[in-house]
Length: 130
Image 1 (cartoon, rainbow, N blue to C red):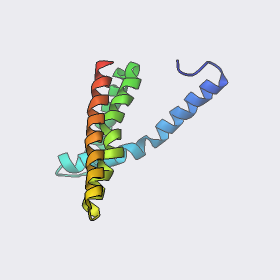
Image 2 (image 1 turned 90 degrees about the horizontal axis):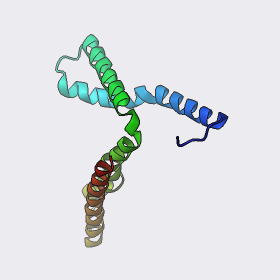
Image 3 (image 1 turned 60 degrees about the vertical axis):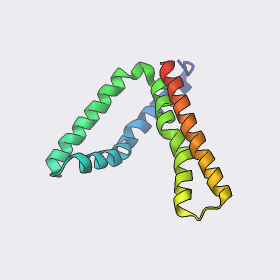
């Protein structure tokens, strides 16, 4: 247990549960919209609702199965998605949107290479310690 027992820990867990429950539709909507556009040619409302329901059931099952490994799952998601979002993508966007000098090319290239190396390293460490 990361939190000590007592009213503070119960309140923190309760607030976290409410936060996850009430923000889930905001998290699910972009992903489900992309998936529906990609895999469903006919976007009838009933079919979309069934697919979203199946997606929720799949995510719920994954949460139950991985409940004991939440720390590893969070670290893996951070390694695979967070590091590129923080280091690689901004450098790529900057390279495409702004005129580049030698200094900015070197700087952006360094960020991209180090971001990819860090992503691979942290992903391997996370998988090995699972």
